[in-house]
Length: 346
Image (cartoon, rainbow, N blue to C red; front, top):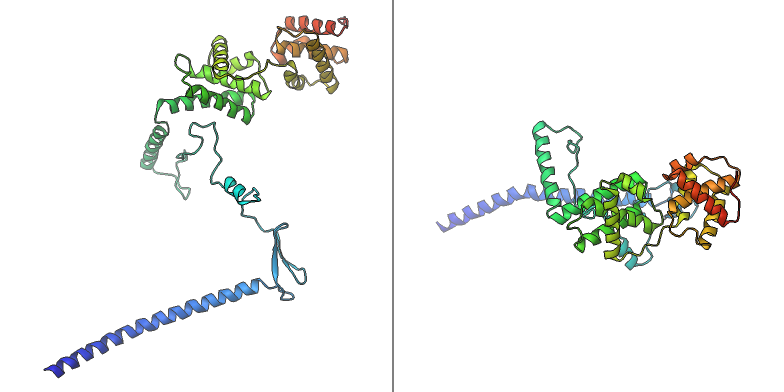
């Protein structure tokens, strides 16, 4: 009985051994195949690092984007694409500071552009149009995504105000720097709880006007009021309130800052623009500009300079470009010429 059991066990062991031998041989063959492939790849890599002409070593010239043989100077590859960042860093601290992913942050968005947004295209990853049921589902997802992005009243307030600043800046032709500065001023006003009792549009208009004044690219009150959704009087009150409460240091507008824009609109010569600057400088030295609108002075200086340089230009053209009345131009240009001790041309 015992011998029979031993023989049975031995037979079962031999059976298991016979069953595992093909698997072991297959595994060995796979390992050998991987070794052969890795060896072939190594050989190809070694061949790629050798010059096809002389067999010398190849080196990459990062300055010119070329692969050059160090022995014979043969250019093996050229015009390589640099997939690295567009910025340079000369130490580890600067490299860590410049490292980033995605678009840069901006203060022109209520969340500074850090959150994601569901696109408006009703197409899948392959560019195929979505079905009606999927489009409805995506629209519901966009609605909920928009609600979660502005979860409290301050974020909704900020989103509306920044949209107004963007709209008015585009209408006035202001730069991105002015938009960013205006958004910072509005964020400060919102953080200091200056909005209760005042309209969002009024404070947004005041922030944009203050930012333009600070950047040295001022727009007249009439120009800003024309693109604003509030009345001019409300805009002025909001501006004075913002400047006073936030302690903004804004110098009085200088008529010289309006000259380049008006001169460009009127297409006058450089000589006329230079003469207008001289008239304004003399008027400032003699105190003639005190208490007078800088826009009217700039327009009158251009008209007076055009008369002195024999360039034909009408008061109506200057009035349309500067958005001031012809009466203001006549009165101011006579004062500027008298400050220069010049007679009024007939």
